[in-house]
Length: 137
Image (cartoon, rainbow, N blue to C red):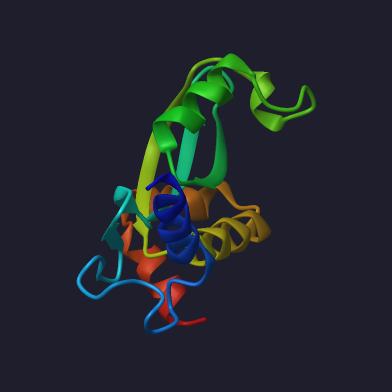
């Protein structure tokens, strides 16, 4: 029985897109979510901007778990040379749900290339700008 279960798990993880590799009806796919043998998995990713009042500074990033990432920024768990080590009072200014990691990374790189605090403030004021950025790429 254990061997059968291991084989079933291997089939599911190896190539879930090949017809016949997963018994019919075991997975339900939608654009942002997958429900299968292992339970509910979120495929969403997030673009975020955090703000430090003490340094009057913004940081732009992406993550699949923004609250965990914020904790790491505040606790300085990342690289000691990380930009966010300058403060410990980071708070989320905006968190935008993206369909996937590629979209979140695109927004992060786009905003970082702008190097413009006024532009970041406009995005916080009107998050629809992010949708426009993604639509025009």
